[in-house]
Image 1: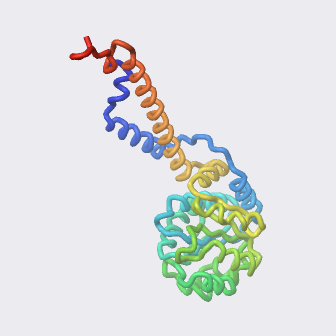
Image 2 (image 1 turned 90 degrees about the horizontal axis):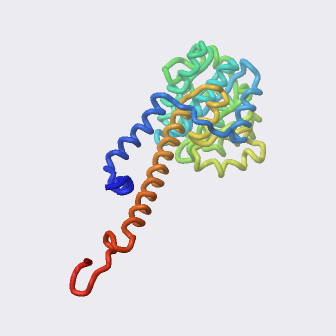
Image 3 (image 1 turned 90 degrees about the vertical axis):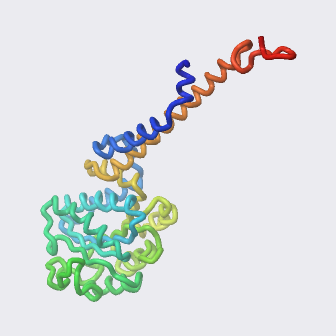
Length: 293
């Protein structure tokens, strides 16, 4: 059996093993494969860089568990940049699972010496969608009496500086669409149109096109879509994270698939070429009344 025939008879378990390694190795040790920085990502980064140091940002964790892989890496990348500028953060969520995602992402801030209650707050979940967000925008302490940890909101030093949405230098929604939570268009109305607070968005890949109109109109200062955008952002802040490892794993898996497709087709082509020669293999001439002689 020559090398081309062996390519046709490889044990499929070998492919599964190589695929597992291609995914696991970049996750354990991120490679940081080069990724071109797209304009929407760079524009978002430059806008955040322009914010006043020490100001306050509000971030809505408006997504459910199924979209965590796309949006949590975006949240962590943005929080690294905000922390480097000493920008304080207020988090809230329009889905019940949102405060848990916020709690995990906000741990980034503690790497920079942030103190809970003074430099950042996780207000927790609010029900009611846009009307509740509107009420929060008009009087921030009217919706939340207790934060996610059970503290009295009015006792938190950071919340004493906030009376309405106008006290935020930036609003951000991490959003997977209007499926029960507060949608991107509702954030546009309640942050930008009602209070003239600059807004950026982190969305799943499928929502990118439908939200481009807000960017083009100037109502949204920046938009980040999916894991790819998180990986690009991590390059801009010079810190590898979940986005980089995720894109490395995807890229390595795709490279392996393409390689096996190429090798498989070469093996099939060469095997057919060899068996198609006159006088050999299954195409050997057959004499009347018997098999090929």
